[in-house]
Image (cartoon, rainbow, N blue to C red; front, side):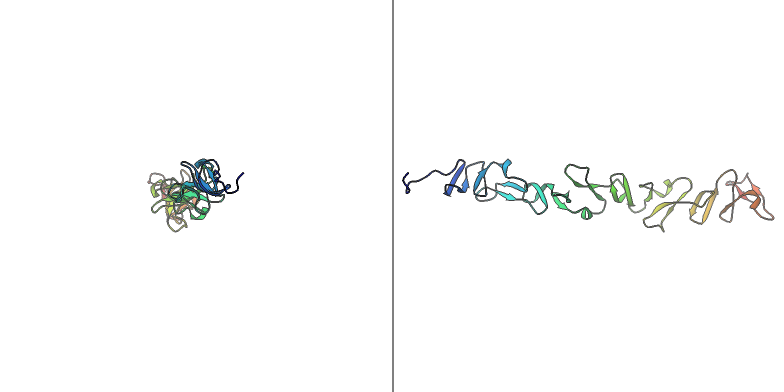
Length: 212
């Protein structure tokens, strides 16, 4: 062959500096490592950048395994989680979110309603304001249930058990109703009938049952 002759670039290459170094690809092809590939062959961590001049495969953001453009990640690298099209570590998912490894792809997912922090979709660890933790769920103070009270002194706020033999209480040491039928209210505590003390009797007609 004539060494001074014009030679064709590789297939799908519109301009090249030598036989193996493409500088501009044909329409619908993208430059990667001096070769021309289709958008689906840019490879992991790259996207087909039509805003580049010439069109080329460009790298996704840091810690992003797949993206649709320079600022929109669709799958994160291992140990990173998708949030608002970006990749963050598990401890940066933010308030009200958790790192969901069951999602496909791994992503920051929202905790249940009224939950400020959770370890997974059904396990709340801290509730939103005016809600109290009970059995990993968040309830209002009126829904703590029999034998529990809304404990604002706890960290985090939670439904806490009343004292033994107490069916309802306003705090850890103030019982408002005792367990029936064997306990009676006396000075915010619950006692058996024989412990009402001198000058008192166990009044089952009272509401609640109390030493009278």
